[in-house]
Image (cartoon, rainbow, N blue to C red; front, side, top):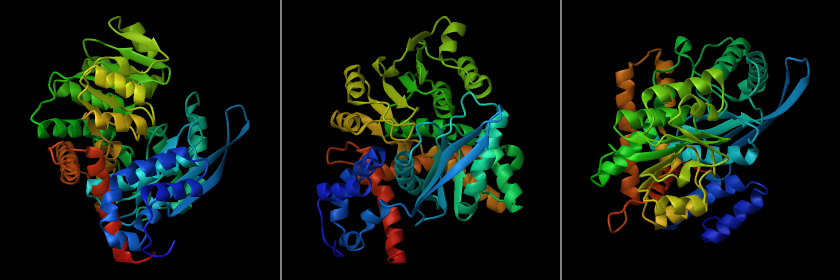
Length: 451
């Protein structure tokens, strides 16, 4: 394509598919962004001339490597690890590491692409990346997880650094895994730097990092509702997932007077019609982080709860749905059930948990829809604050960090409103988030020339 030549959206997406065969998750992520920004993109000739969208949709680099480790029975195991560094136009690469059997290059490229815009929305100087391995920590002993993490970091360390690329946790990577990887990085490099975030408080971690993604999603919901003159108290909320994001979203909802009624895992969901109490949420946290059990156990411990094996919670009547589990967990049929049951808002606590068809249906139904790149940015925002604390060798108080998180989520909301408000006053938060994130990254890329 000659410099400055124009192609329509269909032509652009055809090119993305040709260049990324067998990578449906990545193609879906690019299409979701391209659909919303293409008119804006078309109206700025400088973006066309410098092929900015094409460049953002091509990662700076994809590193793939072998991870060998030994299990407790002495068997040699082989996994595959990746780090996708998508774009560092506005700061060092930043994004989580995911350990799960579903991890593929396509999944990580989509997550890194999304992370680029999410990080731009926070207002902090962070580029976009993502990484991980097709390793499943579930059922593994602590020693097995340690050996895997050490082997993983033995390769990854050469591609990351406090001013280069700063990974964090994600699905399957919590405080235990971060600790093992940080220890191995320090061992290899003989450096104590902020190369990872989500660390323990004893070695450079930040207060409220654990709570940040779930809390931030609820703060974003609060801002959306306030923008149209509505409060959050009393609203019935369905949540998927039972990990870090889901439990802390439920916790913040309870604190604000809302009523979370479901949590789930890959086996099914639990429903508590009267809403979870803080004691019950704490029980789930212990189940998942300490005992590493299954959500079905909750119904055995609390008779008021019902367990629905093999199902997702989107058929339960609610005012707000907050998918916090994994990508493409809420499809078009689920969206139709939510709308039919009177749902007024969907907030993505996970990364792209809503299929493209479901997103289109929810937007057409004028449901308030908060995309993950905006709503779940609280986690990476506090990760960015952890980076700042590490660089300055300081620690901020919980009160300071809570206020900074609230301010960042309000700033993200306001950027979405600026670019996503339609003629009738309705806010298309997906469009607003995509344009705001794209514009910041694109303008930085223009300033650098062709690099």
